[in-house]
Amino acid sequence: MKRKSLEDAQCPVARTLDVIGDWWSLLIVRDAFDGVRRFSEFQKGLGMAKNILSTRLRTLVAHGILEIAPASDGSAYQEYLLTDKGQALFPVIVGLRQWGEDYLFKEGETRSTLVESDSGLTIPRMTPTGSDGQTLTPLNTRVVKVDELA
Image (tube, rainbow, N blue to C red; front, side, top):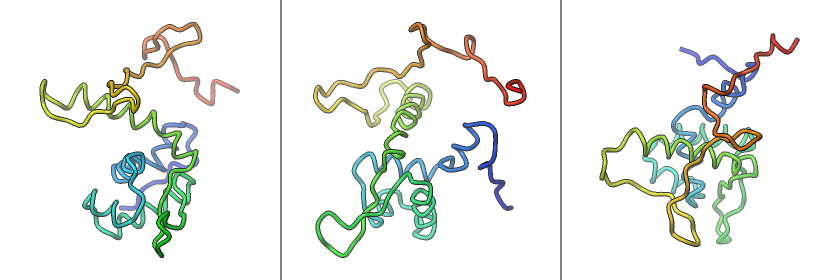
């Protein structure tokens, strides 16, 4: 079955998922934040088929999330680096991590932890806040649909 493209959707969530909505793409981005740069490192760490990895990397490069650069060690290899657009996905990865910590691990179960580099302290919870500093939830926000703007 051919996947339906959401690139023309009026919803920003749908367009975002069209680019990075599959688990492999998000795991590639996660690994890039962790310093993975080379095809072979992504392939080994993720254990994914080379053809799938190649397709996902090509898509992330085409959308400006990753860029290809010569290997930093001067070898003939190439590396995949997060662009500014890719770096901007950090809150998405943190949000997914924090949701997983809250709902997918038993109390006391071993898991990786995201910490501040300088202090070693676990990073604070991400919380959307409004213009006056209040915590935003589905109860005090709404989406203005395109047909409401007309």
